[in-house]
Structures are given as structure tokens and as C-alpha cells.
Image (cartoon, rainbow, N blue to C red; front, side, top):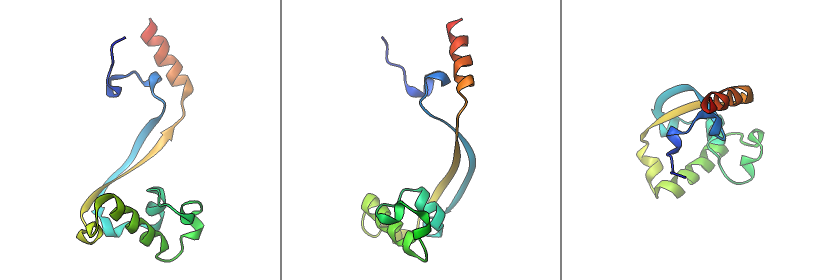
Amino acid sequence: MVWTPSARMPRWASRITLEITEVRVERLNEISRRDCVAEGISGPYSLDPMLCSGPVAELVYEKLWESINGTGSWDVNPWVWVLAFKRLHHQEDYERDKRAVRN
């Protein structure tokens, strides 16, 4: 069997299908509490977004960002791409595409 890049696989072979619903550019330090939680902040606050009151979510996300990008990277405040998406659940589409490939 020949390896095929995932970008060239048929949709029915994908494990997850996402639809991009929004694209925007913003400064890193402008991130909202909701976006901090969506980015996967760790610790007890990641379990329940309601616990992220006040600046707690932003502080936890700042620590996460700097653990990935290095000390002082938060203060640089770079422009970042923000992508919003939704997960699609269309099993009938997968089956239709799968049948089309076989024919």
C-alpha cells in the first residue's frame, strides 16, 4: 500500500471534519476568557469555564503560552491568527463519498 498525505485523502476516510466559521487577526494579549478556555488552559480552571472568573483564565493562558513559546513571549504581544470552527457530523455524507470512490 502506498502512503498518501492526509490532505489528499477522501473525506470519508477522515476521522473528523471541521468547517471554518471565522478568521480574524488580533493581538495575543486581547484574547478573551472564553478563547483562553477554548485554547486548552490547564489546571483546575480547564475543567469548568465558570471557574474562570476575573483575570484567572488570562493568567493561566499566559503561563501556557510562555511554557510553549519561551519566557517573555507574552510581553511581545504578537499578531495572531484566530480561527473559529465547528465540527461536522454527517455520516451519510461519508457513506455517499465512500460509495462514489468505489464506483
